Image (cartoon, rainbow, N blue to C red; front, side, top):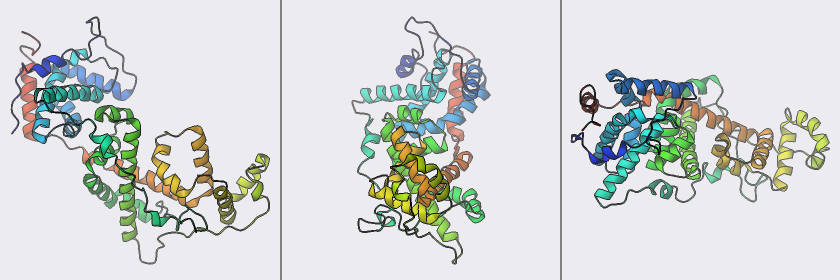
Length: 383
């Protein structure tokens, strides 16, 4: 049972100043995207006393607020913090400047309220929880999937990942796969679970998640990478289990064959166009170029799988991107792995509507009661 929040809560009064210019004047910024415009219209309706708009706002954001609040406090206290946050949102709705998304603005309010609670109770909010949760390295793919130092291609695949673009795989990913991904996300370590949920289920941007959880962009990507990799691995296992017994579970890399001209590939840029056109259809020559690339100390497969999230997040520099693009052109296994990861993200996203958990009837009723006290009648801002 949630305790009721009085309209004179000191935490909420402190939140009134959020969004106000230093000179004390309100400033409205015109939203720049359709989503921001829709959010601004919804908040305007709330400010004008539209209860349906407020309920819609609660349904959209309450779940994420509670998820984040529970990273800072116990579940019972987190519920109080979120309820105070909603009251603070009502009190300062007319001061929302549009400089960030509504959800980022609300999370900022909530974090300040959480800090106030922590100071009152003389305890520390574990803002370093997510940074500490990164912990030691976790391989995205089991090491035995790659060749060791004595292998023909050190750091290369023992057998290539499967392509998931055939009809049985597509059908599985759009049906049972969605539930497999949902269960796996729910079982992830808390930090990974929350980052994956906010990014890939709730659709938050990298910047929003980093700001909301108080972590660096780098730590956010590490947690995202580990969580996504575990979901991909579970989907791979589930797809393998669902295949007929006579279906292959991986392709063995092709052994290289010495073809004239390939040894000078990296020394004679003028020859690359013709060679590139040839290797598209020649597995042996692609393998030969991979062999040359390995000997030159360029990117390996085991290195690529650890960079795949940075690559998808556009968080690699031009030099690294050039090496990744070159590697993908030559390596069927890593192209398949990249396709699997993209299919994993699509499968997680397909469950977005299923994961949109609305607040309970009790929570919604309590927040609506707060809304009705705020408007119509005497505003909480009035003396």
